[in-house]
Image (cartoon, rainbow, N blue to C red; front, side, top):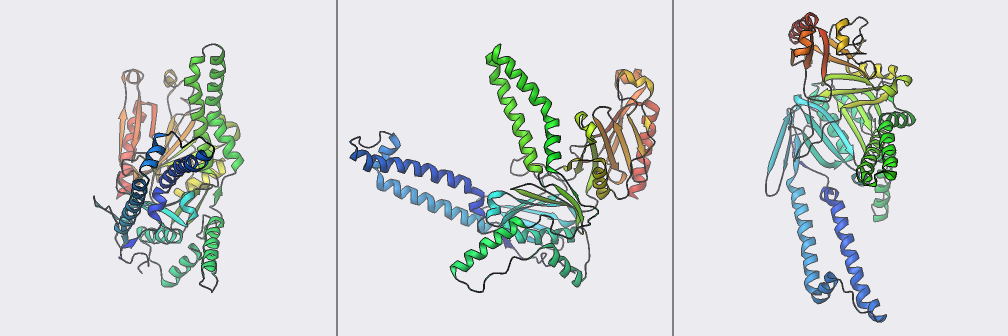
Length: 488
């Protein structure tokens, strides 16, 4: 059964899209003009009464001398901006078919993007604060490849939920019966609160206010989820973990700034901006990760995060290429871990460098970490027996040579490294692209080698070094044979 979203018809974006895209710039221009005209009126009316005369500001004097021309230019500029925004909105359309999702945009330079639904790596719904006030959301469809993603800015919030459900249903090749489709539609996208019967302006305003309140108060995970798979994060733990990650660097910069204030004040121009930058990064990470939750849904793994500006990402089954569990030194007493992934998608466009979110658990206990990994790789368990580095590797791995190693299970290769900053990398055989063995002059003399397991580009680097040369070659051969078996 074809999903109602895949109707093959061209649709336009949210009517307020031009304002939402350039709203901040328009507000800044209006504020600047307001200040300038305020000075003009004060200079003409109040200033003359007080005996001071008009302002001596050159811009104000020019407005006084060319008042009619200034009004005509302002009016013409507003008409031009509004007209171009309306025309760009009219020319920006999208459609979803049984096989493709397409986007057309541009007034002077036309652009046409299309992506196959079977190459969808994830669908994210982003609700920035300003568009959220108007009931709009941004839909990011991540495709396999470096520049194949489609971004719809903006669509109605309810429409974004419908598009996400329809695209994921087609991408995962699920065939639902009519009753099941009706049930998903009823549960996944709750309808707005009942509106008054009257169609008057007051009733419409009340209905709009109720709809916006409904969207702000509604839970981000709207689909029926498996309660056993739901993982949330306590805000206190998030703040504490972020402070432990960035606290040492902030204290070092603060101590340097205090010492510099008494010895070399000129260093403050370097240390103070570093301190402010670290504080800003830590604060942004906390605010971005508040209300974090992850759970299994009928369409895949759903990750939600954000306080005022919210983001919901959905990973269809089988789209994760590598998983990394990491534990910084200062997290070890609390048993906290972070989970990151590699996925074959990015959202870079128009010269930007925005990368799809790679952290599916910012900080969690070992039980929560294993539950999150279990969402990506069901029934996965960490191997108990690892092939570790030989004793002679202590010359290059002073403290970690006993923990450097690798292991296999039926579906994955597991690489472990680090003693103080611990990392565990899991790569499914079906997602491995190649494997390499490398040794340098010192490693060759110690009969050691490093093995790199190559997946799609991302934050997770699957490698383990200081292995016995024979173990490294054996690992290379085993990965090659198991990968070929997984692909057949």
